[in-house]
Length: 222
Ligand SMILES: [Zn+2]
Image 1 (cartoon, helix red, strand yellow):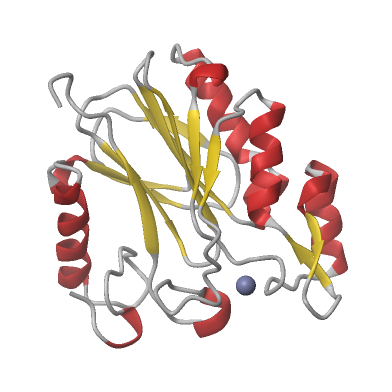
Image 2: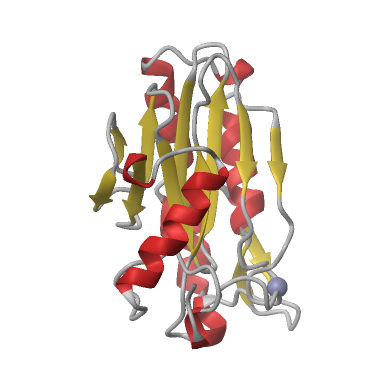
């Protein structure tokens, strides 16, 4: 529904888009997973590693990971260069959604989320993870200081841009963090947000929308 720089499926509130359009976009997304719009719990990212277990919809501020055991409750992580991650243990029926940019990788938010899922009965060896699109290392120039900070948490995230300047590889870093906590089954969407016109990129466009990753536990009958 969104127009202009927010076209088309902007899911982010408080980014300058029309709120009614954002609500309609979120409803379209929720209904695509057969979840009702008021049963979506959305992360309002703090760029840290705070993880919260939820049992109802709403916006959860200052949080970077949401976990639930509730059926038909969608968990929504948003991004516009930052990576989103969906996690599921289909046996324990525990799911999680994570937002992780460079600060999230430095704070190892994905491991914190996996551990919290374990406390809810999940087991890493049964989990599947999906790492959503993010800005690729070739495009993601950062300061040497930022690269060092991220590499201090996970060495695999240290990278170079196409022109040889310091960069962060969010997806490779997150994959290494998942393996470290025993999640060996993960899939990565290699699309670069900066290079793809289909996705939002804060680095490319500044004031822009947010795409997202939504995960929900289906009912037993579906
Ligand atoms: Zn790129």
